Image (tube, rainbow, N blue to C red):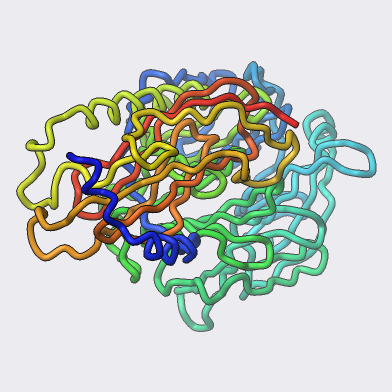
Length: 494
């Protein structure tokens, strides 16, 4: 294609649109970088103690806690991390004063007073919250937990995540009088007073069962939909930072359809367990949709097993699983190694797709790749590789930065007259870029004939020092493949 066809553009038009702002909150997301990790998962055998199927997992830096809700004796078994050595059991089942009737999850807190590990538990059967000193409970058979507060029988906190004594997040369960049905929505929970207040009620979708987790490092709440293919990222005040619509998104809850069955934040990643199947037969997902903490898609990890629960141990980088399959009850995965394989696969796939003949495009599409090209700095030559060079970024940063010293990538559009149908503009879809610590942003939502725009390059808070190589992917609606450009550079901390 002749490069002169790309530059009859009125620069005023390009300037006008480059000054506009693309909607950075609402995005639609494709998730097509799927890798089979079933062979990378190592079994964690639990032979010294009987634990029923469907156990939930909770973790601290030193212990893995396995909650067996079906136990009629000790509810929680404790193992050391990362070696998996059995430590002991605690939390007695029952309706007595020091027992738990219906377990509502465990929050692990290091006490500021004595530095000891505490386990905070909500009991939905005895209607109270309790705190256990873990080491005492494991070693002293006469130990009794401390009762913190009774809970309301009509408005209860479910799936509570502790931030501090007066701030936590929960699924607010409202029992409807005279009915077996209940309502649920996200809320804030004060552990000391028992008060539950609404959290982002305007985002609630009627009939959708929400699941969530909290990042204390970035002060974000991540909510996923069980009946709607959506991911919502909030700040602590309930402001929506990202509203991510998945490939099967519909604005209403589909009661017969199962999407997410769990979500965990494993800094710097969001891990959403995804099904996409029938609610009655495939409610529990086998795949993990991996996003960065800003909601940008990285990969889909297929475990091949129904994932009941997950727990991430950040010091070792190990992801622990509780499965519902007979062949393996518990397992472990080196998360970074799995993501490296996914990243390598994506780069190879994109390179191969970029080299395929455009004539292989489907008859229902506008074409193989959008009629754009990358331009060099002089706006005269085609750019085939973008070398960022040495870029200096602050060593300590809390969010993605787009340094002014990094040149943006210029994209130019050609003539649309040869496309099938009456096409007067081409819509961009969300750009992606690897490695995962890079970020990309286009300032306008679409391109017109003869127009130019920029792709800006950013660096997340997890960007490491040193050399890197990757790929920028620029997809457009109606085209089979994205426009791709290899990128490289060197990061130096200031």
